[in-house]
Image (tube, rainbow, N blue to C red; front, top):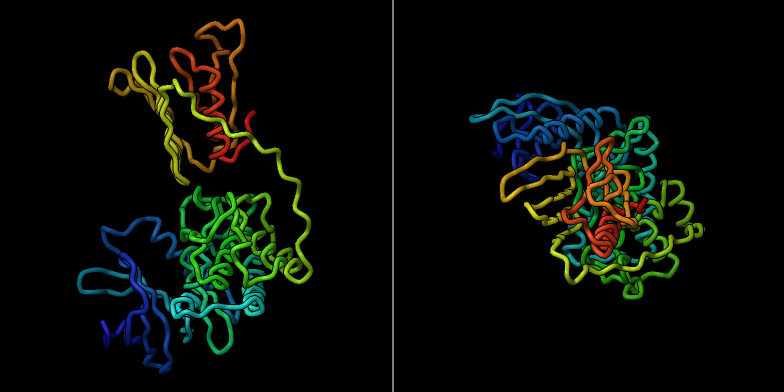
Length: 395
């Protein structure tokens, strides 16, 4: 594509990046002779609606931004290509190296350098989060941060989200594994989500290791294995890179203050729930990973199956292999309550007090029951697993 003229004005010099249906090109503006970046998205039958929505949002948000460390919006046009049509976003070109390139070349950053980078990035986030409504980047990572002329730049606003009013959700799941906080797996994004990604990025810079590969003590990073940073800085990084949103730094201002003066004392931890093992005699099956959970409960005539993934929750029943019904589908982000109706004595099968577990998503209730009724060890185990995985208390 080198040499091709786009928009009757921009001559392609080389490709900077390529994803399915999207190209990022370095071009020269033939009117000004300046280099500019053009991001193309192809309009064809393979285009996903979410991809187009994110591209249009990037155009809209870049138009509204004016910050020396963020590429500037220059224009937007449609381009006819031999086999398709494309939308093109034009923005200023930053000639520098990404922090990811620095890491690939074996460059590590000491504590003083990392703190300088942290303050610069927090300054950019302060601008974004201080907009009305706040703007969440949602994909902070070393490859999206450039060093040029001793200045830091935050690039690639293809995942940004505006948060208006009480809306803290974005059903399109975006981000990069290892740098993306747990809440983004279910489509939620808040200012503290960017702080988690910042913490992950800084950890990569001081260790030269992808955050997902760092040694852990339980669910947290084992900072005793990172000898290159001080205990106070390790504590600050761990505060940003905290999986539990309630225990993470809440704002840029709070993070900046703590970087210089130490972070505030963390709130007391909730009492730990003792792990409950799967009963040895149960026929219930449960499988899970960080983004998917499935529970299958056999009954006399068939089975009940609960599935929760990063987008939705479903509950279906089968009788002798034939589908016998399915509850309405709800969004995963709407799950807000976990109820456990424990067995009562005397017990009458089929009554309202049948022992069961209920998950509420909005106004929709998803009940896990059995025929015969589930035993107390089975219910205790399922309640523990669901509470731990959903991060919801048991009611």
